[in-house]
Image (cartoon, rainbow, N blue to C red; front, side):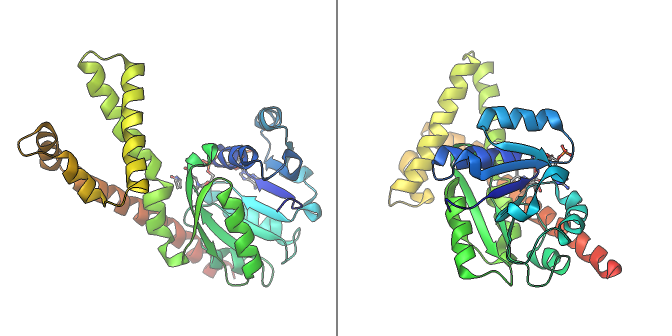
Length: 280
Ligand SMILES: NC(=O)C1=CN([C@@H]2O[C@H](COP(=O)(O)OP(=O)(O)OC[C@H]3O[C@@H](n4cnc5c(N)ncnc54)[C@H](OP(=O)(O)O)[C@@H]3O)[C@@H](O)[C@H]2O)C=CC1
Ligand SMILES: O=C(O)[C@@H]1CCC=N1
């Protein structure tokens, strides 16, 4: 890993979250990383200053010097990128894509023969090395590259090798997941403020509560159900809170959120496949 040169195609939120995690991990040096975008020079300057990495537009990049490309643009831009890459890279240069919904088979069909491709799904907690990242190998990638991709993703948190047909549900749970918890916290903050607590304080209290609960799940033997039951005395405060949560559809709301996010991930992946059939 420490002799690989890694280029990000895309300089947005997700690219920055991964770059930040890579650098904080201490396993990758700034001079191994290079970030690109189409033409937002201001953004490139910002990343260059903040992380000490090289930052150029995609047209200034020397593609032949790169071992690993991390695709980090929006899914809608994938067709232009594949067209652009086809003539610039060789099959043994590894592509790691973070794009929601874009299948490895779609990318393989639109690149050169036997291109090494791995699809990953991190989340924005990459920024602080706490992502939960799925790693799904494409058809032509060898085990050594899969292990390398997993090792890279472990620089930004935990990484799990997963069959690609599970990627939509994984995206619904872990890719989009932090947003559900942030939204929950927005509501906690609101109710705390309405009851007279200082906003900063209630934010900290809410976050510590969420963090403590997550840590309990990770470090204790009990299941989430058992942990919940341990807090819930008959006719107590938690029972009252949980009753209200259920009455207002709390559990169902989360199930629906995950299902809808997974369905959107699936819908996104269908579109380019149709387009591909027309193009070829
Ligand atoms: N946000 C999240 O929580 C997660 C996002 N993802 C995935 O990450 C991807 C990126 O999302 P996000 O960071 O929010 O997107 P942003 O809109 O913040 O950034 C997109 C970046 O892609 C660049 N770009 C577009 N086309 C090209 C190209 N041809 N070559 C190089 N760079 C290009 C843009 O450059 P310019 O500004 O110059 O146009 C911009 O820097 C998405 O595909 C998303 O599905 C995956 C997991 C979680
Ligand atoms: O909403 C999005 O497009 C991205 C993909 C996974 C999480 N967020």
